[in-house]
Image (tube, rainbow, N blue to C red; front, side, top):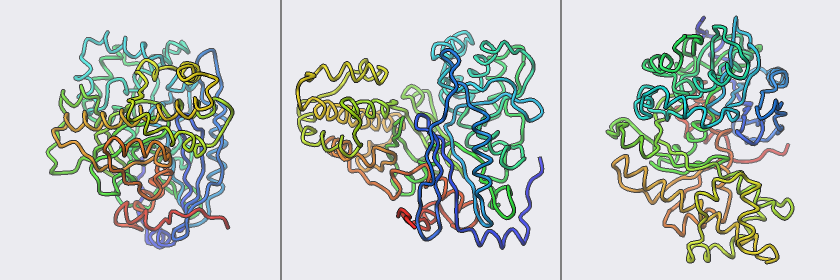
Length: 468
């Protein structure tokens, strides 16, 4: 791999950077392209659903569509622009000579019991696997499980290379091969001991994981990778750590991140003397690498964003704001009466969840939807409060009452009120509802040398929607 030297001309160009194009792939919400203009604000350029190709019960990536999309975004770049990309930290691709080989399977196609059986058959405890992977959760080691499922599904047993899809997208934009370090770590591949894990699961050594060099250009202050004349690309990285850059900019140690998934987050800094252990593993804490360095201890609570979305539309599609207004008159009742849905109910798919919970308050009851939404908000708040307490105990630190929040729930009045009722003082930072996009834009400015910190970079991007 050829590393990019920062020439005098490029340094001059970096001083003229005034726009960042941010392409974000949501786990369930499609793909968006935002434009952030330094000193002016931001706008949504477009939002599109990903046209999944189904083969039985398997989701296949629409690769031609994705390639066309990357070409389109690259063509939009002007001199002085940076393109930055973010996607979920899961999918991998199989390659030979830089090209994709066969079908690309979406991570949700891999059955949970398939991965669990692989772990059991390895004869190694989940904690030991997690430790070998750099203290990510064993069930999050997507490359191994997807590779095994891919072989079973396609019947392809040829020796191939597997890389994160994020790195493949960077390659398609820039022509350069390299691994983003935070994405690599968060897939369980970013530490030396992960080679042993690969051997445990792949006795025939049919796949070489992460064969490229790690990207220096993400971390050494270079502008980024040239993609068109005087325009640059920040390598694609993990979406949720980018959102947590906004959370961490508040200076608070703890927070709740939300979206399709939601969970709790603790910022770990040098000198905190917090070490991953079997106790933190049993508390379902993952030590996730942050873009640009640093670590967050996080715990996934659930994928309940789709439940909220399905419930709010139970009687016809309404806005999130309208749903919150319907629930607000009932949130005190939900808190006092401890209206909480069981884990069994919360584990249902969205359609079955709506059918089940709407029966609780009576289909004919005009307040049924508001009551049900309030109960769901209360359930989410209780889960968040308990998640914070459990994580703090495992980390050996006091349970926080002052927290930050990012993601869609940061714009949800009834959930914010439910968190307050449960004793949490919630700070909503700028861009809380657009945290992944804003975090990616701020990281791009930081890498370009335009800001000394993420907080300073966020201040250069006013939280103001551009209409011009």
